[in-house]
Image 1 (cartoon, one colour):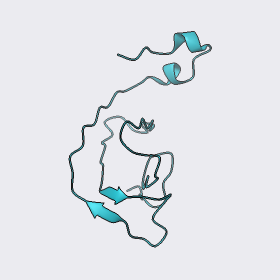
Image 2 (tube, helix red, strand yellow):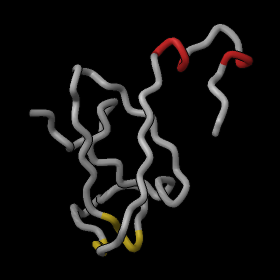
Image 3 (cartoon, rainbow, N blue to C red):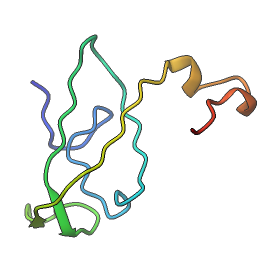
Image 4 (tube, rainbow, N blue to C red):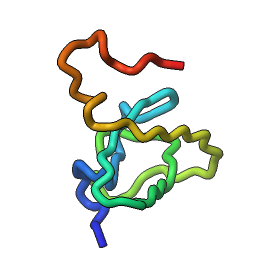
Length: 85
């Protein structure tokens, strides 16, 4: 198992006020057939859960996932970046 505390390159606990509506987060896939799990939402969030708590809320999430080959993440020039659809 991989711990979600603290956050790391695998994702983990990404409680940060910059992660909100319209955010884009890139996470590596470390193993073939890897799974994705998302957790709780917060009504208000600073930079981390310093006290170990947050203002938890229920809600709905629209999540889009794309697998981007590594060669497209580090192109030799910006002209070879994949186009948004």
